[in-house]
Image (cartoon, rainbow, N blue to C red; front, top):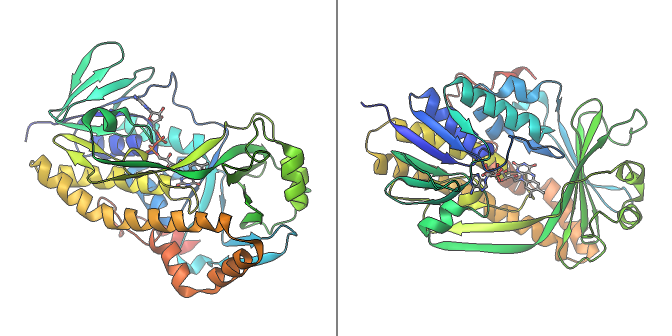
Length: 387
Ligand SMILES: Cc1cc2nc3c(=O)[nH]c(=O)nc-3n(C[C@H](O)[C@H](O)[C@H](O)COP(=O)(O)OP(=O)(O)OC[C@H]3O[C@@H](n4cnc5c(N)ncnc54)[C@H](O)[C@@H]3O)c2cc1C
């Protein structure tokens, strides 16, 4: 079979995973990233078992997790710092969960993609794509691929230019993220625990990511004028979360307010163009699975289009495999966010019940248990088994 060529818009989590997966399967690959450098500073990212398996499969696991912390417990706490929910998965469960600096993840993916032969062009914006495989860049030049991947995020120009039918919806909430110093005095949570604190419509996702750093995501609804202020109104946030106020006070240079959007498309591929990650199915950050599903998409797409020289058949098979699980994760993530609008007492009762319900736990872990095409279970997951 003639060596096939892929043009990818966007060097984020999904685009770089697809680039690595395709290059490792013999494709020539070019990735166009509009940012001047591949960077993702100022934020952490939760990666569950499903995403970690993909990192192992493409060879980016060690570099991503180097120096990171493995978690065995999640706690849900209320505005008075009382634990309203606790979930424990022991090492022998095989379930791995890490929260790492996003920068580390993206650079590790870039490195494996480049090592496999992919070319990554920065400062190179894709302005349009066509179903026949033509990609137009902002500098006026054109590229052609046997496959074009739109991995250019929630406001994807690839999606818009090809005219994928579907909808982008605001979820009326969002987050401000920051990485702050972690001090020896931050002893509130046990060592292997991350937490979600709730207070009214506000939430803080709190996870140490290294011995010296803690990742914070301050989430609230759009109609919380104090909570959505930029730079963040730390007095207001500390009033809501007095137990972690000393940590919140360390926030300097946070990322900008990021709204949660949902993308729902009728289909993920048209002609030679496929969309993946946020471009295809952006979701709220409530389950921490937007990046996980982008990783799954990337490897599964690479595997399915490489198994056959019939591109349409490969893309159909990819979407048939991925879509049911991704749709389900997106739906549950959206439902979880609706708790923000519940009155305090019923919300805590719901959180309490959810942390005890096997059914809810199964839904939450449905993503973690998923094995996308391109991941050989016999070769990955060893770290999970040994703890
Ligand atoms: C507050 C918040 C917290 C989150 N926390 C988590 C979490 O803990 N775990 C998790 O799994 N997910 C999380 N997510 C979701 C996750 O960030 C996304 O789902 C994930 O980044 C999607 O990856 P992607 O590669 O599809 O898109 P992106 O990461 O958005 O990457 C798209 C890339 O394309 C580039 N680009 C855009 N337009 C163009 C263009 N026209 N031409 C060229 N390049 C272009 C962008 O610069 C970017 O580099 C969170 C999201 C938010 C908002």
